[in-house]
Image 1 (cartoon, one colour):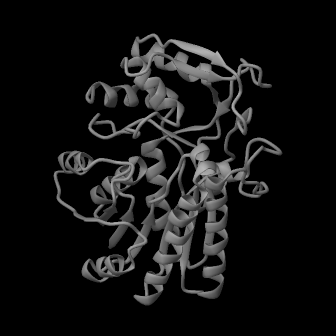
Image 2 (tube, one colour):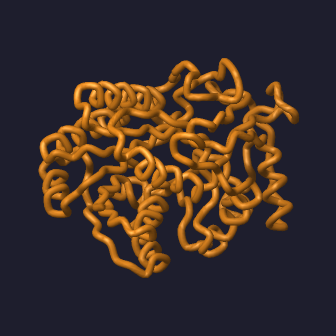
Length: 332
């Protein structure tokens, strides 16, 4: 099966493309390097010891997108080509809506034109907003609080409506909790452009001396140690969820929204402590004021993924901090 992986040079896209390649699928990567580097492709080839096709393009370029679908005989699309900084989205909302919402519509229109019926979408558990209960299952109300989260909610509705209007179409929106870690080889990992938005790469860069310290935003939440609690999921488990979605549900046309998380939450201080203990590296940190929009706790209730995808997270926090540090050490 030939799978178009948009945003396939990014953190999650590259790991997923590599997993697809190793499982006998044929990924065709499309990326414009807005949040990644060409060296990622070299690293992927080194790990896989196989070649793959790459198209440098933006998903809103209709002509090149359609050419890619025809030229590479695409059967399925995996969508990772989204901007992902929640704070930034409030400053440049039109860019986020154009990239994620217009980009998705462009893809779906091209797929419809060439009779393609399988679509796996990179969504986020942030669409749930402030949790009304924990752990969070797929029945939890959607309550996005910024343009980034709104784009995920809007695309969910678009996919649901598209599947209803086209009974032969399959779409799955996978709602990630907090991806972390790196490929076990140490050759592929998360390398944000500029200042990291996520905790793990910030901790890793602090350990490497790139950052002076980790800013912990708030220690007065209603949690065990006062710092925010999140459900961290190893990147390898996350990509397994994508392949499982295609293999388990790809022959059953319909729309599905599924959480991908471990079901266990760790606080900021617990993650820092685990990193220090496992890797023997002290992390300097400083307590700052809470950030607007941050919540105390968020972690998944994952049984739907267990049932529908026959998927369950295999790796724990110790694996994530170990693999993330191994990646950073090979890229200092």
